[in-house]
Length: 266
Image (cartoon, rainbow, N blue to C red; front, side, top):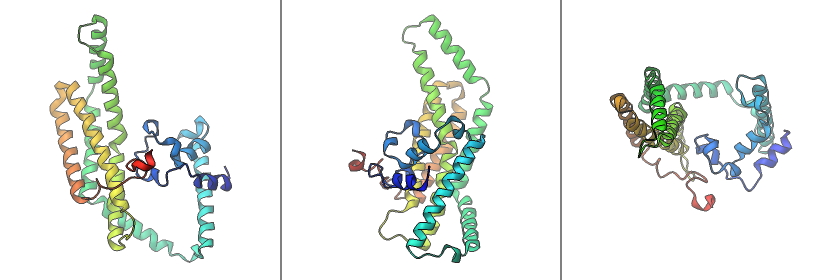
């Protein structure tokens, strides 16, 4: 891909501007991939199986090419607007970013989200053979063909719940760190016309929590012998959701491009 092709992608009117800023990065489950520039870029640039594997050299080569093209576009835009990039104090900017990151990591929401990450990790590590036991149980039910038993549906429900929990396990913290860091910057330089990015980041984190809580609820139902441990996780996650809503009271009202904008979604 060259810079002209990249520019053509950015100018495509079919794409919803900024839709990728407030999504959950789960493209396989997204109904807006045909209207997302990031998805189109990924599909076109990372067009072979090797380039999708972070352990493969092809992935990093392709990623480096994207960074190079992006840098070219930034330099062209800076020249157009008369901005001298060489005159910017990059060291001061890096120090400010590092300070903001450290402050964000010490925020109560960030600390609680890290506790959730560790709690989920510990639960799956200590769960031991429960999934194998459940599989054996469902296989037995299928063989016996018991009335009212739906082992295939139950297996699918459990599999989906695990997939949801694992997908959002680290995602929640990442988005909360962005939300907290952005809120500090917005306090120093409040946006006048535009919605706060911190609210958008907090909203998608809250949505991830909602879906994770629902997934843990399904786990609670299907693993009665482990309900006490699952309840501990649910309590931790519910408290995190409460803290987040308190810290970002306007997050739920944030309108995410495409997802919450009915006119664009149509």
